[in-house]
Image (tube, rainbow, N blue to C red; front, side, top):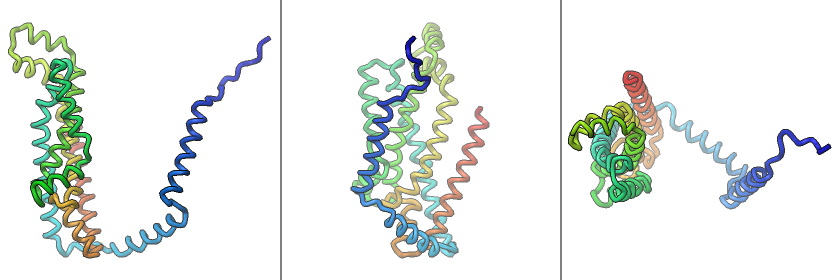
Length: 258
């Protein structure tokens, strides 16, 4: 009789891989100087820093409101421009609608837009266009194109081609095929993508201001430099409230579209 086979044999490749990964984590921590003493010291400094932030001060509410409105405007404009530019890119990148000679280069353009973090793009536009909201709108528009055009293309590639072929067989033009064969199948998903993009840009618009691209981020960075931590706390609470409100509104819109 042969020996009984173990019901759960050990997976040695996985164990070796996990051990090597753990060893590298320990090695990387040692190289970066991450120690328990530094962590303990950091927690103590964090406690003292947070103590200086409370209670928050809303005395300069006009400056706060101006920065919040500018961030909102940056988010709305970059979202609208990003969607407007991403629609043709998504159509050209969809391999079930476009030939390879068109979809390939278009996907390369989308990949370039996705390759750089929006803060890096914002720094580039600040150098090119100067300080202000224009650089923030341009940076977030590029980031939006890289994000939403890819989603648009993937959504179009998942549609049923039977409806498209039926519209083509009826003698419709290329615009008619898109309007009656493609758009009805992806409209709800496109609206959902747009809402998510606006929600994402609203968060991102608060960060690009730190590098001089307008919005509440610039106000926040200036408050940090002045060691005005109670005003920093007020700004952070306002940002959290704005994002929470946007989350509630976008959730209601998504529920209404279902």
